[in-house]
Amino acid sequence: MIKRLPNFLTVLRILLVPIFVALFYWGGDVRTFAATAIFAVAAITDWADGYLARRYHGVSPFGTFLDPVADKIMVITALVLIASSGEIPKILAGILISVIIGREITVSALREWMAELGERKKVAVSWLGKAKAATQMISILLLVYERPLFGLSGRKLGILLLIVAAAMTLWSMVGYLRAAWPSLMASGVRLDKDR
Image (cartoon, rainbow, N blue to C red):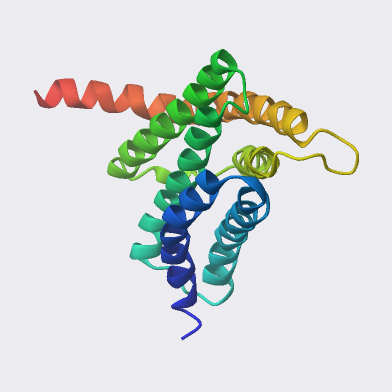
C-alpha cells in the first residue's frame, strides 16, 4: 500500500489544479487563505511523493513519467493565473513566465532526447534545479497569498524571488545543455551517417 502512495500523491496534485483555479478566482480571503493552502499542499506532495518513492522503493515507470508532468501543470497554471491577475507588471510577468516555461519545455525535450541515447543520467535533476524549484514554489505562494507577511510586502518579496527563480532557471538550463552537448553533437554525426 505504501508503495502506491507516491503515485496517489502525484495524481492528487493534478486533481488539485482545478480546485486551486476556482479558489484563486474566488478572490478575497478565499484566495488568500484557501488557494494558498491548496498550493502549499501541492508543493508538499511534490516533495513527499519523491521521498516516499525512494524511501520505500516505490519508484515506478508511471510515477517517473507523471511526477514532472504534475509539477509543471501546477506551477505553470499558478504562474499564468498570477500574470492574469496583475500581481506582477505585465512586461515583467511576460519575461519571467516566458523564461520559466521556455526552460521547462527545453529541458523536458532535452531529457527525452538524452533518454533515447541512453544517457539520461547526464541531465538528471541537479542541486541547482532543486533550489530553483524551491525558490519558485515559495515565490508563487507569496504571490498567491498577496498580503503582507511579517511586516514585509508579500507581493514584492514574491516578485523578487520569482526573478531569482528565473535567473536560476536559465543557469540550470545552461548547465544541463553543457552536460548534454557532447552527446548531442555526437548523436548528430551518427544520425547524418545513418542517412
